Every structure is written in structure tokens, then in C-alpha cells.
Length: 110
Image 1: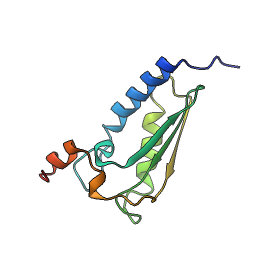
Image 2: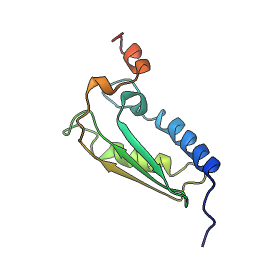
Image 3: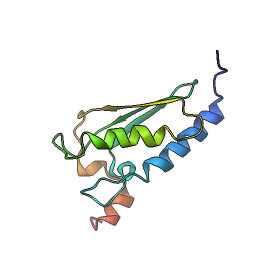
């Protein structure tokens, strides 16, 4: 059995995951999925398994099949991540209010 990761190492993995998420863009909106507010939660176990709870801007989004797989694959490249999974949810429904201030500025909404 592997030794559980320390809290500091888990925090470091979390920071790296956020950096990776900020490299993934919604193809219809020129802002990364993290700043868009599409990431609802990132759970990291002591064993290095990562589960991402995310949404899309709309249930019929054209990247509904590919975007979660891209997120899963890219998070899987972070050092220390043993396994990554993405759970897609539409509750709560995504709204523009979920975007960060940075995203709103980028889109000229401020």
C-alpha cells in the first residue's frame, strides 16, 4: 500500500491542477474554463486520485463529449496524480455570474 500524500503535497497538486485548467479554453468563449466558472470542485484524495466536478455553458454544448475528456487527460499529466476523473453536472446551471472578474474583464463585461 502506498503512503498517503501529505497535506502540503496535495495542496501543491491542487495548484498545478489549477494551472492546467487555465490552459483549457472553451472554444466558443475566448476564456479558460477555470475563469469561466465551469469548474465546480476539484477533489484530491490522499492517494493522488483526482475527481473534477464541472459543467458546460449549456447542456447541448458542442464540446460536451470532448471537453471533459480533455480535462481528464490533462489533469492526469500532473505529477502526483494517479488517476483523474471528470463528473459533468448541470446543477447548478452555469450562468455568466459564475465567471471570475478576470473573465468578465477579458470579455469586456466590466
